[in-house]
Image 1 (cartoon, one colour):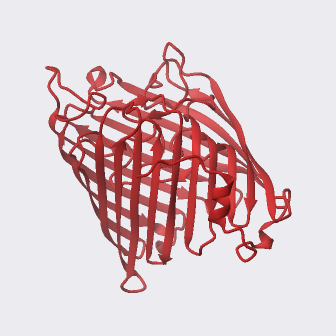
Image 2 (spheres, rainbow, N blue to C red):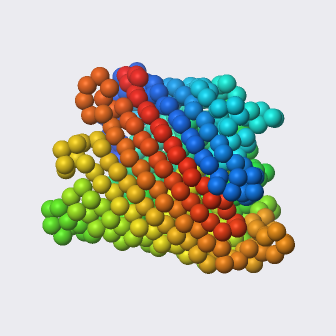
Length: 440
């Protein structure tokens, strides 16, 4: 993969085409007229029980926390003219409701709230930021605090407050069916941090002193049955990543369809190799059937590399079928299978209610050739080999369809995992309640 450089306005102009044919005048709705303001309430309960207790990898035992968030977002329209200007801004606050006398996780991947030096959760924290934006023809450019949505860098929103990044991003829709996007990011802000200039951190290797993240790619919808995606990203002095994916569907009858898909990543060390040398490729494939409100799918995933397939911490930058609630099934040489069932109750007269259950199992995990950063060893100091794990998830969600509570959502997520030496056994439960308090 070639090195990704900073994106100049000249490159953006070339991508957009900057022709009168490409430009749609009706898109310039006005700065105020096209604006939108929302305030969302999010109540988050998180319970994780490491069945191994203090002997589990990471040394964490039972953790529990309840917190409340209010997330306000303002997205302006664009000023009139060939080149329109606008502004996005947000203000978010997370409030501690209960941590049960220290059961808040204490500086772990569990954390719902930021913690102090003693591992105690803070009573509250805030995130405030914004981005200036420009639209010319079919290209939109944002500079400031942004929320990228690429398979190689996708902001995470699985905790109390969403993750954000600081930098420059763009998107372009000049060609029908094709969406291009890219950017240069200088820092990231973790979901439990008020600091908008945190350094970069990866999920498995932790903090890394990289000067920036660059990415570029596109998604193409061929028709209602076939779509493709190709993206590339570079975490400077750490890795170059490429991603290819496709989604397929084929209707057999009005109520019956076959579905499928494929995802592939390759990650290669780059520059100063801050996380050691590696050349990892991992892929997943999916095949299933949809019948009315029922969907049943079987997936297989395989990591052919000698190290964990890593990604930015707490982000959703891993478009693999077997990357689920807790496990990613991405350990060295790991092979995994998963069976998933989804049910939409709309066809049974209960719109807004849905259920999901899945079971995944991974095996053949082998750290014998891992580099020093990703190496995991047993109590005797030998690399872990022949490791296994499984995870079972159950989820129910309901979105209120009418009345004063319209769009209020309730989601419960239960997860159970069991593993050999390299991970802990745990039971996890999440309850998430969201309500749009304001939408203007």
